[in-house]
Image (cartoon, rainbow, N blue to C red; front, side, top):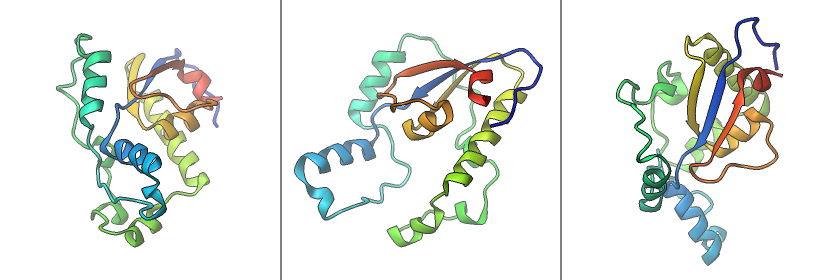
Amino acid sequence: MASPSPSADKTIHFIRHGESTFNQWRLRSILTFSWIFVKDPMIIDARLSAQGKLQLAHEFGSAGIDTTSLADYWWLSHPTAATMTIPQSAEEVAPLRESVADLDARILAFLHLLRDLPQTNIAVVGHSSFIKRLTKATRKLANCEIHTTTLHQCLK
């Protein structure tokens, strides 16, 4: 990755989302071996499962975090041709998959976005695979788990 800017370091709290309906399907499919027949259930924009909502309430319900100023779907604030329509089949999803180089470029762009924010204490909620790659961790985070690090560490 790139070297950090000379500005003051920032504390970043990476938080894995609670159990989603996709996570729920995946666990159930592993336990019942149904994954042999269905590789991707095409759950578009998977919401939190009932268990995920309980996890979220348990971990953060009394934290008093104000999220009212967050924009919906902020990650798609600059849509591309590929993200303008919602895929309806596995065949439509396949071309959207990122290469490792594309993922690393997206991670670096995201870190630069964090660097340019005026805040010095930032929470990021995301997927475990993205957080694992970005933080160079050896394992994925559990549902609603927090990993705190610095921007400097992420940019190394």
